[in-house]
Length: 428
Image (cartoon, rainbow, N blue to C red; front, side, top):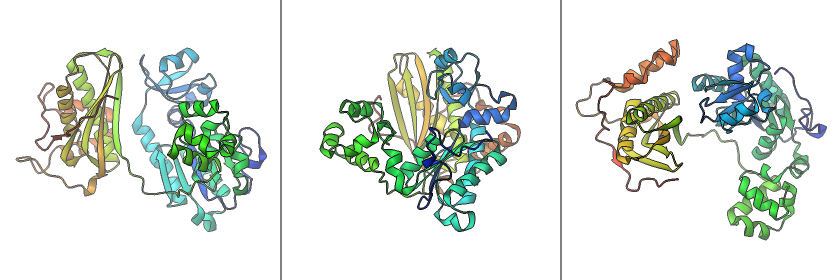
């Protein structure tokens, strides 16, 4: 961090930070190795060392890897055991969602200082439309430099920025600017930038679709652009072929949208060894429900549908859900429903993974709440909000998930307003 790439990776000066940015108001800003970078910021002694963040157990999965770790072949979504084999000298750390959430909010605040037109894609990336900021802050490339400087100076983190006339090309630009760089794709050179790229650079082209296209001799974006539409249609279908044909010519009419709404919030855990003890599973569901409740309240969201995900030892995965009469962001209510769902499922096999998710989200501050008959005026939501405040001041470790229960083995029943869906989700 601290260096500034004038020429993007690959060395093509046509797309460096000094390229013509006329008519390129769209920025895609992507934080570099975000989770790992936040961990290094917490522990400066880790700077320059390979750092891997994720599940640290035998069945864990890598969430983020520093560029020093990536040099050994470590990648996100890789099993942690594989990462240890590739880079045994790395520092392996568990995820700290609270720290990443706090850093994300600080990053997004910088973006909103530049323009109100911010479309977050995840905790560590967003599109910005900076057309309206040009008079005050300068052209798009200068604004990209300003953002990178503020993220570095104020937050001690680094980011990469793509500058282009469309969202699709800006996102490709930031990927090729990594790490800690800028790529500007001039409006009249979009095809020069786009067509040499591999076919899987196109949005919507996954591993299988890329393999299908390569079998047809379409290995680059340019080859897809020049291919007969009928050939694409026969290989991928009508909708996908039309979508890819438009992207291959750099056509992407989507605007930056500020109306980003989370569809669901959830958490899951993979056990180090398969679990059969109901008390262990109950405890896991309780801790996951607590995490989900905290994240809902932080996002000012509440949801009506609670779902669980159960992966058995033979890798079969089962999902079940129930919809409540009113939205909730209360961990105790989420847990009560999740545990009832698990008991009704009665999988009768050892469990590899469990997850809890709340769906059907709406703004919590405007959500109607139906109090339970006989419930006190101030109840579990107020108690959990107080726990949030204590955690913000003293750390989440001071708040035990067991505090959601009045007794360690107390029977918890879902509230009467819970209604099962007529068609439970089928195994996926």
